[in-house]
Image (cartoon, rainbow, N blue to C red):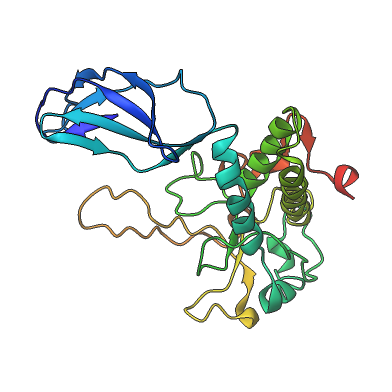
Length: 278
C-alpha cells in the first residue's frame, strides 16, 4: 500500500532487485481514496504478486518530485514462518516457570474445603509448571483481566491449543523446512498440556491461577489464587475498576467452563487426560 497526505500523480511502481539494482517488475498503483476517520490520509494499492523469484527487493514509486523507495524485504518460500517461529517458541520456553518459584509450586497448601466438590484431604497440591503470565509477572493463570466469567482472554489453555494446532498444520506441510520447528513445538505443547493435567482439580475444573501477591513476588508467598473480578466495566464514574471480593468457596479457585475450563479440558483430536500424556 501507498499512503500520502495529498493526491499526487503516481504513474507507476517498480520492484527493484536489491542485489543488482535491476527493475524486475513494473505496474500501476490503484487509487483507493481515504478511509473514514483515518485523518487526511489517502491510499493506493499495488500488486506485484506475479514476481515470485526468491530474493531481496525494494519497491520504488515514481512521483513528480522524484522516486521514493521502500525498505528492503524478502520474497521467498515460507518467509514469515522462518523469520518468526523460532523466536516465538524461544519466548514461550523462556517463560516457563522455573527455579525457586517452580520448586514452591510443588507444595501449595489449599484448605480441604476449597479443593473442590470431593472435599480433598487438605494436603498440599502439586501445581508446578506452566508459563508465567507476562514478563515481570510470575503468576501462572488460565485467564486474567477478566470482566466476566466468559469471553475472557485464554492464556495457558489457549497457548497449548495454539501449539498443538500449529504442530498439526506444519506436520502435513511438504519439504523439510520445519523438522526442527516441529520437534520444538511438540515439546512445548506437551509441557503445557502436562501442566493442564496437573492443575485439574479432582472431581472439578482447573485451578485458575498460581501466583505470589505483593511487589516481591517471593517463592515463599506462592499460593493458589481465587477469582478477583478485577478490571470490571464501570457502571458509573464513581465506581472503581476493582471488583467486589469473591466469597471464599471452592468455585472461586477454579475456572468455569466458559472461563477456560472448557478449552483446557479437551479439544477435538486432543484429550488432555493422563492416559494420553503419561
